[in-house]
Amino acid sequence: MIRASLLTLTLLASGGTDAIRVVVPALPPTTTPRPTLPATPTPATPLPTTGTPVRPLPAAPTPRPPGDPYYPQQWNLAQIHIEDAWAVTPGEPVTVAVLDTGYVRSDELGTREVNGYDFVSDPARSGDGDGRDADASGVGPFAFHAETVANLIGAARDGRGAVGVNPDARIVHVRVAGTDGTIAVQDLADAVRWAGGLNVPGTPVNRTPARVLNLSLFVDFIPLTGCDARVRAAIDAVTARGVLVVAGAANDGRDAAGYTPAACPNVLTVTAVDRAGQRPAYANWGARVALAAPGGSDTDPLPLWSAGAPLLRDGTSFAAPQVAGVASLMMGVNPALKPADVTRLLKASAAPFPAGRCEPASALHTCGSGIVNAGAALRLVANR
Image (spheres, rainbow, N blue to C red):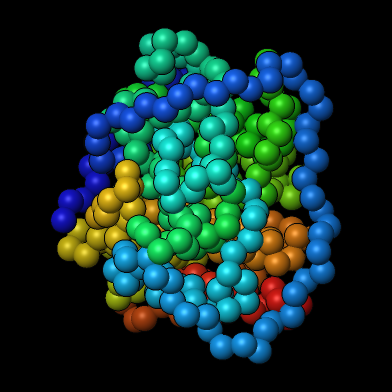
């Protein structure tokens, strides 16, 4: 059992040197072919605001468990009551953008996975010899991180490997981290806009805009100053288009109010709990946290799937994608849901914390409204 290493790195930002941290254990780099994308900017792609009618809650019993061999080990899916959610819908073709270390092809995602765009602007950190370009392929020892996150969201129910929360999700990879794991704040802000379907000058239009953005990353400026204005403006802009932004609370065991994007308004911030429903010492807490999801611990890490094999890790990086996956199911059942609706329903349906390290009444160590309950959330959506 291996715990992800916590790296203190340098953030490339104008006006001084700050700090960024990401929870990414090192694995060998993976390369993928470079696709060709259009180079001419066009107007932003509209997002759907209406769709098929909301489906009523079916009376049928819970479907048979997946036959994927790793599924029995995925205790996190049982903890969020995913089979109850699959009784409402077995999956929804909703697009989720993974803003992370970049595209690494996953057999679990196949044609549902898109190599989106590389927003790493500094050639010295990109590892591919240039700045921003139309190839989001992950480069360097942290490249696996995005694939692991994507598999948590959308790994297929196909009788092999593992299963994701939404087995029909469409994934768009948006690269924001360099080979050393560092992220320039302006790169992150522009990536948020692009992933949500907004125009970014000098960048091709995103023809697969997402309804949900997953940000399994965190910036902790020194001193801790909260949400960066550039990232906040980008998040506010995509939220106005109906895009939900989900982010990990960060892994310092501190108040998430000091961190970007966890402290930003219009972000559904997720902390981690272990198999017993307790907050691990590494997981951030506080009033900015909306709810919790399984993230594992040092002694009982999360059962993940990466590069076609099991992987054991812990962290809020892996709690957030499960909530993003549930949100994508909800938006598929009811495409008219707004980000605030999804957040409200997730919080209202969350399972209560056991007594211990996550007390909603505690102003100091609150972990949000509870532990995400996918089944209860989907029933609320289906019965609206």
